[in-house]
Length: 430
Image (tube, rainbow, N blue to C red; front, side, top):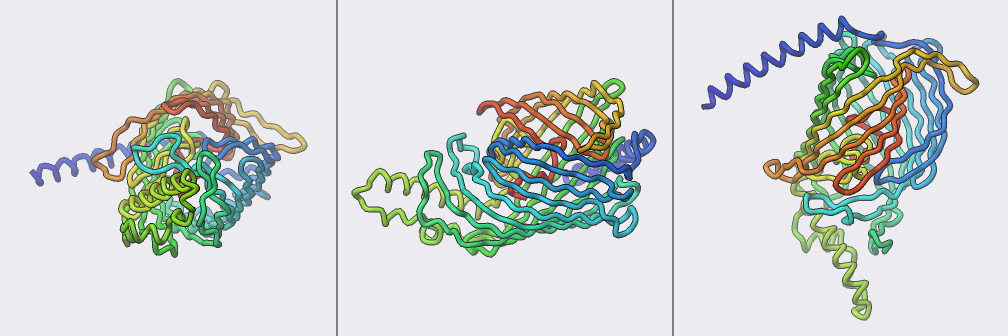
Protein backbone atom coordinates (compact mmCIF):
# COMPACT_ATOMS: atom_id res chain seq x y z
CA UNK A 1 0.00 0.00 0.00
CA UNK A 2 2.81 2.37 0.92
CA UNK A 3 4.63 1.53 -2.35
CA UNK A 4 1.48 2.24 -4.38
CA UNK A 5 0.99 5.55 -2.59
CA UNK A 6 4.65 6.49 -3.20
CA UNK A 7 4.30 5.69 -6.93
CA UNK A 8 1.15 7.83 -7.12
CA UNK A 9 2.92 10.74 -5.46
CA UNK A 10 5.86 10.34 -7.87
CA UNK A 11 3.53 10.40 -10.88
CA UNK A 12 1.72 13.46 -9.51
CA UNK A 13 5.07 15.20 -8.92
CA UNK A 14 6.18 14.53 -12.52
CA UNK A 15 2.86 15.75 -13.90
CA UNK A 16 3.09 18.89 -11.79
CA UNK A 17 6.67 19.50 -12.97
CA UNK A 18 5.62 19.05 -16.59
CA UNK A 19 2.73 21.46 -16.08
CA UNK A 20 5.05 24.02 -14.53
CA UNK A 21 7.52 23.75 -17.42
CA UNK A 22 4.73 24.13 -20.00
CA UNK A 23 3.28 27.15 -18.21
CA UNK A 24 6.75 28.63 -17.71
CA UNK A 25 7.43 28.48 -21.46
CA UNK A 26 3.99 29.86 -22.30
CA UNK A 27 4.23 32.64 -19.73
CA UNK A 28 7.65 33.68 -20.97
CA UNK A 29 6.45 33.66 -24.57
CA UNK A 30 3.27 35.59 -23.81
CA UNK A 31 4.63 38.25 -21.43
CA UNK A 32 2.54 41.37 -21.88
CA UNK A 33 5.15 43.68 -20.39
CA UNK A 34 8.72 43.94 -19.20
CA UNK A 35 9.70 42.22 -15.96
CA UNK A 36 11.16 45.48 -14.67
CA UNK A 37 9.45 48.80 -15.32
CA UNK A 38 11.60 51.94 -15.22
CA UNK A 39 9.00 54.44 -16.41
CA UNK A 40 8.65 57.24 -13.79
CA UNK A 41 5.17 58.02 -12.47
CA UNK A 42 3.73 59.75 -9.45
CA UNK A 43 0.37 60.05 -7.71
CA UNK A 44 -1.03 62.31 -5.02
CA UNK A 45 -4.39 60.88 -4.08
CA UNK A 46 -7.12 60.82 -1.43
CA UNK A 47 -7.52 57.49 0.35
CA UNK A 48 -11.01 56.44 1.41
CA UNK A 49 -10.17 53.34 3.42
CA UNK A 50 -12.87 50.92 4.52
CA UNK A 51 -11.86 47.56 5.98
CA UNK A 52 -14.43 45.22 7.58
CA UNK A 53 -13.60 44.84 11.25
CA UNK A 54 -11.38 47.93 11.38
CA UNK A 55 -13.84 50.59 10.23
CA UNK A 56 -13.50 53.59 7.93
CA UNK A 57 -10.82 56.20 7.64
CA UNK A 58 -9.88 58.94 5.21
CA UNK A 59 -6.50 60.32 4.35
CA UNK A 60 -4.00 61.20 1.69
CA UNK A 61 -1.24 59.25 0.02
CA UNK A 62 1.65 59.97 -2.31
CA UNK A 63 3.51 57.49 -4.50
CA UNK A 64 6.53 58.03 -6.72
CA UNK A 65 7.35 55.03 -8.89
CA UNK A 66 10.70 54.46 -10.61
CA UNK A 67 12.46 57.50 -9.20
CA UNK A 68 14.94 59.06 -11.63
CA UNK A 69 14.54 56.16 -14.05
CA UNK A 70 15.41 53.54 -11.42
CA UNK A 71 13.16 50.75 -10.16
CA UNK A 72 12.77 52.37 -6.73
CA UNK A 73 9.21 53.14 -5.56
CA UNK A 74 8.41 55.31 -2.55
CA UNK A 75 4.98 55.60 -0.91
CA UNK A 76 3.77 57.59 2.07
CA UNK A 77 0.25 57.70 3.45
CA UNK A 78 -1.75 58.84 6.46
CA UNK A 79 -5.33 57.89 7.34
CA UNK A 80 -7.50 59.06 10.23
CA UNK A 81 -10.94 58.00 11.38
CA UNK A 82 -12.02 54.80 13.09
CA UNK A 83 -8.33 53.92 12.88
CA UNK A 84 -5.20 56.05 12.42
CA UNK A 85 -2.34 54.74 10.30
CA UNK A 86 0.83 56.33 8.93
CA UNK A 87 3.21 54.44 6.63
CA UNK A 88 6.33 55.20 4.62
CA UNK A 89 7.77 52.50 2.35
CA UNK A 90 10.59 52.12 -0.13
CA UNK A 91 10.48 49.23 -2.60
CA UNK A 92 12.80 47.71 -5.18
CA UNK A 93 16.19 49.15 -4.28
CA UNK A 94 18.57 47.02 -6.38
CA UNK A 95 21.56 45.93 -4.28
CA UNK A 96 22.54 43.64 -7.15
CA UNK A 97 21.09 44.73 -10.47
CA UNK A 98 17.89 42.79 -11.16
CA UNK A 99 19.02 40.03 -8.76
CA UNK A 100 18.85 41.25 -5.14
CA UNK A 101 16.29 43.81 -3.96
CA UNK A 102 15.79 45.65 -0.68
CA UNK A 103 12.39 46.82 0.61
CA UNK A 104 11.97 48.75 3.85
CA UNK A 105 9.27 50.67 5.67
CA UNK A 106 8.17 52.30 8.89
CA UNK A 107 4.66 52.54 10.31
CA UNK A 108 2.59 53.58 13.29
CA UNK A 109 -1.03 52.91 14.12
CA UNK A 110 -3.79 53.59 16.63
CA UNK A 111 -6.68 51.19 16.20
CA UNK A 112 -9.51 49.47 18.07
CA UNK A 113 -10.11 46.47 15.84
CA UNK A 114 -12.84 43.91 16.30
CA UNK A 115 -11.13 40.79 17.73
CA UNK A 116 -13.22 37.64 17.57
CA UNK A 117 -13.11 34.52 19.70
CA UNK A 118 -11.42 31.64 17.93
CA UNK A 119 -12.99 28.38 16.87
CA UNK A 120 -15.96 27.17 14.85
CA UNK A 121 -18.50 27.65 17.64
CA UNK A 122 -18.25 31.44 17.74
CA UNK A 123 -20.79 33.91 16.43
CA UNK A 124 -20.43 37.41 15.03
CA UNK A 125 -21.25 38.79 18.51
CA UNK A 126 -18.36 36.98 20.23
CA UNK A 127 -15.75 39.71 20.11
CA UNK A 128 -13.85 42.31 22.09
CA UNK A 129 -12.42 45.71 21.10
CA UNK A 130 -8.80 46.14 22.16
CA UNK A 131 -7.51 49.68 21.63
CA UNK A 132 -3.88 49.29 20.58
CA UNK A 133 -1.25 51.88 19.68
CA UNK A 134 2.06 50.90 18.15
CA UNK A 135 4.91 51.65 15.80
CA UNK A 136 7.59 49.67 14.06
CA UNK A 137 9.50 48.87 10.89
CA UNK A 138 10.02 46.08 8.41
CA UNK A 139 12.81 45.17 6.02
CA UNK A 140 12.93 42.59 3.25
CA UNK A 141 15.67 41.13 1.05
CA UNK A 142 14.52 39.40 -2.14
CA UNK A 143 16.63 37.20 -4.39
CA UNK A 144 15.39 37.06 -7.99
CA UNK A 145 16.08 34.44 -10.64
CA UNK A 146 14.99 33.61 -14.18
CA UNK A 147 13.34 36.95 -14.94
CA UNK A 148 11.42 36.94 -11.64
CA UNK A 149 9.84 33.58 -12.33
CA UNK A 150 11.40 32.48 -9.03
CA UNK A 151 11.85 34.61 -5.92
CA UNK A 152 13.17 33.88 -2.45
CA UNK A 153 12.90 36.45 0.33
CA UNK A 154 13.52 37.07 4.01
CA UNK A 155 11.48 39.66 5.93
CA UNK A 156 11.75 40.93 9.47
CA UNK A 157 9.09 43.01 11.16
CA UNK A 158 9.54 44.60 14.58
CA UNK A 159 7.08 46.68 16.53
CA UNK A 160 6.45 48.17 19.94
CA UNK A 161 2.85 48.42 21.04
CA UNK A 162 0.67 49.23 24.02
CA UNK A 163 -2.89 48.18 24.82
CA UNK A 164 -4.70 51.25 26.14
CA UNK A 165 -8.00 49.55 26.93
CA UNK A 166 -10.15 46.56 26.10
CA UNK A 167 -13.95 46.72 25.85
CA UNK A 168 -16.58 44.12 25.17
CA UNK A 169 -19.29 44.43 22.53
CA UNK A 170 -21.48 46.40 24.97
CA UNK A 171 -18.76 48.95 25.69
CA UNK A 172 -17.80 47.64 29.13
CA UNK A 173 -14.12 48.12 29.92
CA UNK A 174 -12.14 45.14 31.26
CA UNK A 175 -10.24 45.53 34.49
CA UNK A 176 -6.72 44.25 35.17
CA UNK A 177 -5.53 44.74 31.58
CA UNK A 178 -1.77 44.84 31.12
CA UNK A 179 -1.14 48.19 29.43
CA UNK A 180 2.65 48.13 29.66
CA UNK A 181 4.65 48.60 26.49
CA UNK A 182 5.41 45.34 24.69
CA UNK A 183 7.43 44.37 21.66
CA UNK A 184 7.14 41.66 19.04
CA UNK A 185 9.25 40.41 16.16
CA UNK A 186 8.17 38.35 13.17
CA UNK A 187 10.70 36.52 11.01
CA UNK A 188 9.43 35.40 7.62
CA UNK A 189 10.93 33.38 4.79
CA UNK A 190 9.01 33.15 1.55
CA UNK A 191 9.33 31.64 -1.91
CA UNK A 192 7.41 32.50 -5.09
CA UNK A 193 7.10 30.60 -8.36
CA UNK A 194 5.46 33.00 -10.80
CA UNK A 195 4.77 31.59 -14.26
CA UNK A 196 2.09 34.03 -15.35
CA UNK A 197 1.98 36.35 -18.33
CA UNK A 198 2.25 39.49 -16.17
CA UNK A 199 3.71 40.11 -12.73
CA UNK A 200 1.12 42.62 -11.49
CA UNK A 201 -1.98 41.97 -13.62
CA UNK A 202 -1.92 38.32 -14.74
CA UNK A 203 -4.44 36.86 -17.14
CA UNK A 204 -2.79 33.51 -17.83
CA UNK A 205 -0.66 31.05 -15.88
CA UNK A 206 -0.16 30.05 -12.26
CA UNK A 207 1.56 31.43 -9.19
CA UNK A 208 2.64 29.33 -6.22
CA UNK A 209 3.66 31.03 -2.96
CA UNK A 210 5.01 29.69 0.33
CA UNK A 211 5.47 31.72 3.51
CA UNK A 212 7.06 30.62 6.79
CA UNK A 213 6.38 32.93 9.75
CA UNK A 214 8.02 32.67 13.16
CA UNK A 215 6.52 35.12 15.68
CA UNK A 216 8.68 35.97 18.69
CA UNK A 217 7.30 37.08 22.04
CA UNK A 218 8.57 37.28 25.61
CA UNK A 219 5.23 36.34 27.21
CA UNK A 220 5.65 33.13 29.22
CA UNK A 221 1.89 32.54 29.20
CA UNK A 222 1.88 32.06 25.40
CA UNK A 223 3.15 29.07 23.44
CA UNK A 224 5.82 29.52 20.78
CA UNK A 225 4.83 28.39 17.31
CA UNK A 226 5.40 28.94 13.60
CA UNK A 227 2.99 29.30 10.67
CA UNK A 228 3.18 27.83 7.18
CA UNK A 229 1.06 29.48 4.47
CA UNK A 230 0.65 28.11 0.95
CA UNK A 231 -1.22 29.90 -1.83
CA UNK A 232 -1.82 28.62 -5.36
CA UNK A 233 -3.34 30.99 -7.92
CA UNK A 234 -4.41 29.90 -11.37
CA UNK A 235 -5.39 32.28 -14.18
CA UNK A 236 -7.45 31.11 -17.14
CA UNK A 237 -7.78 33.59 -20.04
CA UNK A 238 -11.34 34.45 -21.06
CA UNK A 239 -11.58 36.10 -24.44
CA UNK A 240 -8.90 38.56 -25.46
CA UNK A 241 -8.46 40.62 -22.28
CA UNK A 242 -10.34 39.06 -19.36
CA UNK A 243 -9.46 36.25 -16.98
CA UNK A 244 -11.00 33.74 -14.60
CA UNK A 245 -8.82 33.50 -11.49
CA UNK A 246 -8.77 30.73 -8.88
CA UNK A 247 -7.10 30.55 -5.47
CA UNK A 248 -6.41 27.75 -3.02
CA UNK A 249 -4.99 28.86 0.33
CA UNK A 250 -4.02 26.96 3.43
CA UNK A 251 -2.44 28.02 6.70
CA UNK A 252 -1.21 25.75 9.50
CA UNK A 253 0.24 26.60 12.92
CA UNK A 254 2.81 24.31 14.55
CA UNK A 255 3.62 24.49 18.29
CA UNK A 256 7.34 24.44 19.16
CA UNK A 257 7.23 25.27 22.89
CA UNK A 258 3.94 24.70 24.69
CA UNK A 259 3.01 27.07 27.52
CA UNK A 260 0.67 26.28 30.40
CA UNK A 261 -2.87 25.09 29.71
CA UNK A 262 -3.75 24.81 33.40
CA UNK A 263 -6.94 26.82 33.98
CA UNK A 264 -6.11 27.86 37.55
CA UNK A 265 -2.61 28.97 36.58
CA UNK A 266 -3.90 31.00 33.65
CA UNK A 267 -6.61 32.57 35.80
CA UNK A 268 -3.85 33.79 38.09
CA UNK A 269 -1.65 34.97 35.20
CA UNK A 270 -4.13 36.58 32.79
CA UNK A 271 -7.43 36.72 34.72
CA UNK A 272 -9.40 39.94 35.07
CA UNK A 273 -9.42 39.99 38.87
CA UNK A 274 -13.19 39.49 38.91
CA UNK A 275 -13.21 38.26 42.52
CA UNK A 276 -12.25 41.76 43.67
CA UNK A 277 -15.66 43.03 42.51
CA UNK A 278 -18.05 43.18 45.50
CA UNK A 279 -20.92 40.69 45.57
CA UNK A 280 -23.27 43.66 45.78
CA UNK A 281 -22.41 44.34 42.12
CA UNK A 282 -23.56 40.90 41.04
CA UNK A 283 -24.36 41.83 37.44
CA UNK A 284 -20.96 43.43 36.87
CA UNK A 285 -19.20 40.51 38.56
CA UNK A 286 -21.12 37.97 36.47
CA UNK A 287 -20.18 39.76 33.24
CA UNK A 288 -16.55 39.93 34.31
CA UNK A 289 -16.42 36.21 35.09
CA UNK A 290 -18.01 35.37 31.74
CA UNK A 291 -15.42 37.41 29.85
CA UNK A 292 -12.60 36.04 32.01
CA UNK A 293 -13.63 32.46 31.27
CA UNK A 294 -13.74 33.19 27.54
CA UNK A 295 -10.28 34.75 27.75
CA UNK A 296 -8.84 31.75 29.57
CA UNK A 297 -10.42 29.18 27.24
CA UNK A 298 -9.08 31.11 24.24
CA UNK A 299 -5.57 31.07 25.75
CA UNK A 300 -5.81 27.32 26.43
CA UNK A 301 -6.71 26.71 22.78
CA UNK A 302 -3.98 29.11 21.63
CA UNK A 303 -1.35 27.36 23.75
CA UNK A 304 -2.49 23.97 22.49
CA UNK A 305 -2.83 24.68 18.75
CA UNK A 306 -1.28 28.09 17.99
CA UNK A 307 -2.99 30.43 15.55
CA UNK A 308 -2.85 30.15 11.77
CA UNK A 309 -3.42 33.10 9.44
CA UNK A 310 -6.99 34.30 10.01
CA UNK A 311 -9.59 34.85 7.31
CA UNK A 312 -12.06 37.64 6.68
CA UNK A 313 -11.43 41.25 5.69
CA UNK A 314 -9.91 42.55 2.49
CA UNK A 315 -8.35 39.32 1.16
CA UNK A 316 -10.41 36.17 1.68
CA UNK A 317 -14.09 35.82 2.66
CA UNK A 318 -14.60 39.52 2.06
CA UNK A 319 -18.12 39.62 3.51
CA UNK A 320 -16.70 38.99 7.01
CA UNK A 321 -14.73 41.26 9.32
CA UNK A 322 -10.96 41.33 9.33
CA UNK A 323 -9.64 38.33 11.32
CA UNK A 324 -13.15 36.90 11.79
CA UNK A 325 -12.09 33.25 11.59
CA UNK A 326 -9.02 32.07 13.50
CA UNK A 327 -7.86 28.64 14.62
CA UNK A 328 -4.90 26.29 14.34
CA UNK A 329 -5.70 25.60 10.66
CA UNK A 330 -7.49 27.63 7.97
CA UNK A 331 -8.41 26.82 4.36
CA UNK A 332 -9.86 28.84 1.49
CA UNK A 333 -11.16 28.16 -2.03
CA UNK A 334 -11.84 31.23 -4.15
CA UNK A 335 -12.72 32.21 -7.68
CA UNK A 336 -12.94 35.60 -9.37
CA UNK A 337 -13.95 36.54 -12.91
CA UNK A 338 -12.13 39.74 -13.93
CA UNK A 339 -13.76 41.46 -16.89
CA UNK A 340 -11.35 44.01 -18.32
CA UNK A 341 -13.76 46.16 -20.32
CA UNK A 342 -11.12 48.80 -21.08
CA UNK A 343 -7.45 47.88 -21.57
CA UNK A 344 -6.39 51.00 -23.42
CA UNK A 345 -3.11 52.41 -22.15
CA UNK A 346 -4.08 55.91 -21.12
CA UNK A 347 -1.16 58.22 -20.28
CA UNK A 348 -2.02 61.18 -18.07
CA UNK A 349 0.00 64.12 -16.80
CA UNK A 350 -1.75 66.55 -14.51
CA UNK A 351 -0.46 68.62 -11.64
CA UNK A 352 -0.71 65.92 -8.98
CA UNK A 353 -0.55 62.75 -11.08
CA UNK A 354 1.56 61.34 -13.90
CA UNK A 355 1.49 57.81 -15.18
CA UNK A 356 -0.30 55.30 -17.38
CA UNK A 357 -3.68 53.76 -16.68
CA UNK A 358 -3.72 50.27 -18.16
CA UNK A 359 -7.17 48.96 -17.35
CA UNK A 360 -10.68 49.37 -16.01
CA UNK A 361 -12.14 46.21 -14.56
CA UNK A 362 -15.27 44.69 -13.09
CA UNK A 363 -14.93 41.57 -10.95
CA UNK A 364 -17.38 38.92 -9.74
CA UNK A 365 -16.11 36.66 -6.98
CA UNK A 366 -16.94 33.93 -4.51
CA UNK A 367 -15.17 31.92 -1.87
CA UNK A 368 -15.48 29.09 0.64
CA UNK A 369 -13.62 29.04 3.94
CA UNK A 370 -12.86 26.45 6.63
CA UNK A 371 -11.10 26.74 9.96
CA UNK A 372 -10.55 24.43 12.93
CA UNK A 373 -8.01 23.63 15.61
CA UNK A 374 -7.79 20.04 14.33
CA UNK A 375 -7.36 19.27 10.62
CA UNK A 376 -9.94 16.49 10.72
CA UNK A 377 -12.57 19.06 11.79
CA UNK A 378 -12.09 21.34 8.77
CA UNK A 379 -15.38 21.98 6.98
CA UNK A 380 -16.02 24.46 4.15
CA UNK A 381 -19.24 25.87 5.57
CA UNK A 382 -18.58 29.62 5.31
CA UNK A 383 -19.10 31.41 2.02
CA UNK A 384 -18.81 34.86 0.52
CA UNK A 385 -20.10 36.25 -2.80
CA UNK A 386 -19.64 39.67 -4.31
CA UNK A 387 -18.67 42.08 -7.05
CA UNK A 388 -16.19 44.89 -7.40
CA UNK A 389 -14.62 47.53 -9.61
CA UNK A 390 -10.92 48.18 -10.14
CA UNK A 391 -8.65 50.71 -11.79
CA UNK A 392 -5.25 49.35 -12.80
CA UNK A 393 -2.11 51.41 -13.40
CA UNK A 394 1.20 50.52 -14.97
CA UNK A 395 3.66 49.50 -12.28
CA UNK A 396 1.20 47.44 -10.27
CA UNK A 397 -1.01 49.96 -8.46
CA UNK A 398 -4.61 48.76 -8.28
CA UNK A 399 -7.45 50.72 -6.67
CA UNK A 400 -10.17 48.29 -5.59
CA UNK A 401 -13.76 48.63 -4.36
CA UNK A 402 -15.55 45.39 -3.44
CA UNK A 403 -19.02 44.60 -2.11
CA UNK A 404 -19.54 41.12 -0.66
CA UNK A 405 -22.30 39.28 1.14
CA UNK A 406 -22.33 36.11 3.21
CA UNK A 407 -23.84 34.33 6.19
CA UNK A 408 -23.24 37.23 8.59
CA UNK A 409 -24.32 40.08 6.33
CA UNK A 410 -22.65 42.36 3.79
CA UNK A 411 -19.43 44.36 3.77
CA UNK A 412 -17.83 46.98 1.53
CA UNK A 413 -14.06 47.08 1.12
CA UNK A 414 -12.00 49.95 -0.30
CA UNK A 415 -8.40 48.88 -0.71
CA UNK A 416 -5.24 49.10 -2.80
CA UNK A 417 -4.02 45.94 -4.60
CA UNK A 418 -5.71 42.76 -5.75
CA UNK A 419 -7.07 40.29 -3.15
CA UNK A 420 -5.49 36.97 -2.06
CA UNK A 421 -2.21 38.45 -0.85
CA UNK A 422 -0.09 36.50 1.66
CA UNK A 423 1.10 39.70 3.39
CA UNK A 424 -1.56 42.42 3.28
CA UNK A 425 -1.02 45.55 5.37
CA UNK A 426 -4.28 44.98 7.29
CA UNK A 427 -3.36 41.47 8.49
CA UNK A 428 -2.44 42.03 12.10
CA UNK A 429 -1.44 38.43 12.48
CA UNK A 430 1.44 38.95 10.07
